[in-house]
Length: 387
Image (cartoon, rainbow, N blue to C red):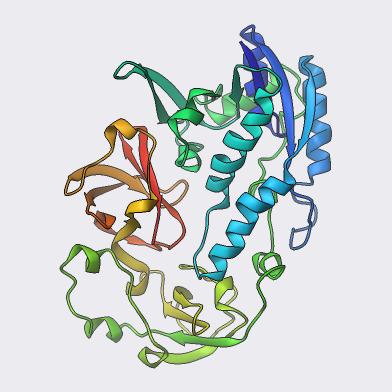
């Protein structure tokens, strides 16, 4: 096969290219530049020019053609502008999920096909399996074999069409084995640290990064005391069980001030700058309309705990359309609401207006704008944006 590898300058994509070359495939390397602006980026983190130089060294070592493509315009429009819009609404987006859906397995994939390749490979820790469907192939997206590196969650918005042309050569390996293979092949990425932060942007000072589009605006921090919840009615319906609490400034006491509610997210601890408490304060809610941040004392504060979540009917995505639920159906799955969270037992209820997910145990820090992904065993079945 003629295969394009998204070579990032990291060890994972380097070994993906190595394995494909060893298997006898015709491999070509593509390096994506998706970001130019260093505003808010922490100095020295993930410099793309260094990554480019290393990727070129890897391609030379493997004796494979190397191509550079600039997708920064598409990345800004499809990922970064979405990020700004979500934060402005008081939601917390996951740019890595969007980057995979909109860039790596869409724009980048189309660019790769212009080179005449048959498939596109990445260094993701996940696996793909092909099974027979009703007269056509069905692609299963499976968790990576390394439980500490499984990245299937980041691919939770991929479609069958995208999976059809995608390959994940290292999904069956453990991270130490990947580094060992890189060292044995004398690849320059063997000891390179994994990149962190926003996909293709790197680690950022988030408020500084967001202030490119979102203005700072002083507002109040209101502390919600535990007795607030004792006065709340018992939640019995699906809608009540899966909704967050609604707070008003009068429900608590002023504990401090902030510079913009849209700079904060549920569960955040740092950046509040409020002392005088036996335990740390955490953000339990934000209201960008009134520019108010609500906080509670302690990791176990009731405002951080929820039994369920809601996804709009229009926001439901089935990686396996053949397994889509029908209206009124209930189904058991294992669910995660963030990367590396252990899978949680839950019941999914599909209603006309929404999909409701009710967990067996309360979950901490359910956050609007993030993705919930549900699994059947180690297969990722579907996902959706949390309301």
